[in-house]
Image 1 (cartoon, rainbow, N blue to C red):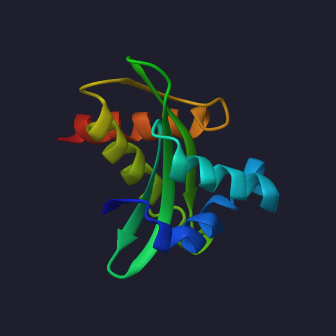
Image 2 (cartoon, rainbow, N blue to C red):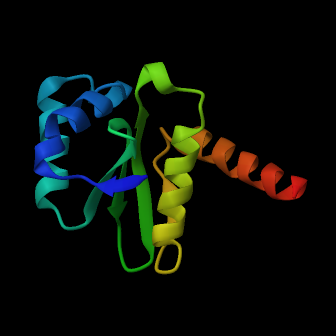
Length: 125
């Protein structure tokens, strides 16, 4: 289940985002979290299953028409279970009526894989 980031989940969110190569530096990571807390155009969501937060996905509203997925991270011990794909799918559902959803170049390949797997699932139905 996708939930909005809240301050009380800051350490968990920072831990998840730290798995992303561009967020390894602690100062950079702190700036990123602060941006999600203070910038109304930045939205961070966490993926929760039962009582565990397993993933994070962040989106930036670029203008009136574009929303950019800029962070996708899943706890390494829960990777390859479809959590990243589920997060991308939920973000698409949340934003597609008002925005064209795309990604940063770092996430583009993963996003395309998610799109391909969604297409093949609908072909199977």
